[in-house]
Image 1 (tube, rainbow, N blue to C red):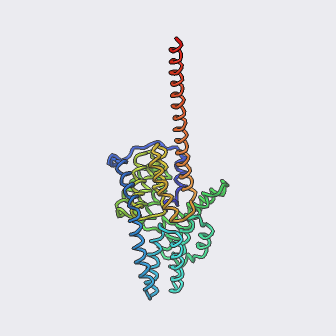
Image 2: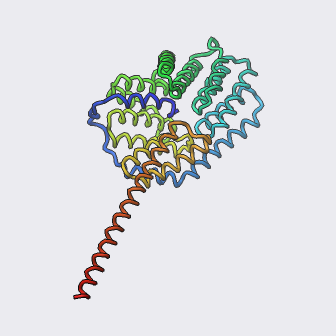
Image 3: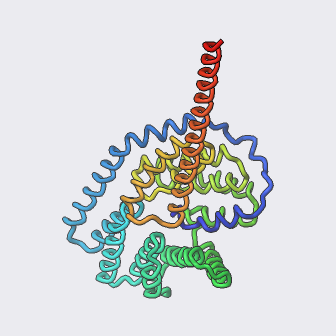
Length: 358
């Protein structure tokens, strides 16, 4: 979900913002200690992945043994969520299975909700045609409140994705207008204090440049999530975006790092935070660490879905270009030093020859 609103973030970053002070109670951060935790977590990644696989296997075995359709549906939904940020093709499979089971139970409310979740999964992975197809099949009148949240959220993301890929300004604005309508719809039906409510409230406040209010909402969000979960990583990511708007480099990196750390420990393959952190590290000149984080992110994202998305490609390209520029600078420096050494040797040789002639 972190990639869902990146275009909004880029648009906000284009607006001149005067740096605002952060709360005096904001903790001091030790970035080096955090980066060491991330390095340690990366080294332990195979263990986290094995734990996720064990959980999936146990759930799948229960699903295959279960005879009652209602219980099978609950297990299929659990499998969808286990795969949602871990392996895209499997997530799509179990979303389809949830739709089939809901149809067999004659539950149009559940069928619509799972179609909405499938549509969101599709648009989040550049499958916009499939996303639109699923959304057009949803019977909105059959949806309950939870289903409406997922339905409006999927439409909101779909139009955001459409806006990010068009090169026609008027069309882009029309997509943004529709995205805003669906964002308002989500806020109308979402439970206050839910994950959807929190991140959209922060989006709205950030768009209005009420960054301190956004941090207040973030403080409340942080209290509702369990540390070390994917939900905690999601909340930390949005907190980092606010500090990015405030031009607070250290706290932006800190919360990106906290988000990445939780995702690594949860065996999340749909990596965004670590990739953005790597890009910032490259900007800071810490290229060796940036490249390590880049390679790990690429490995994870390839496991989630083989094809890179636009925001991932841009970050990767930026880091590679900075590494290439640094390599050119090192090569130029080496040539300069070599030239100076050769010149000094020639001078020394000339001096020796002159002395011998004398």
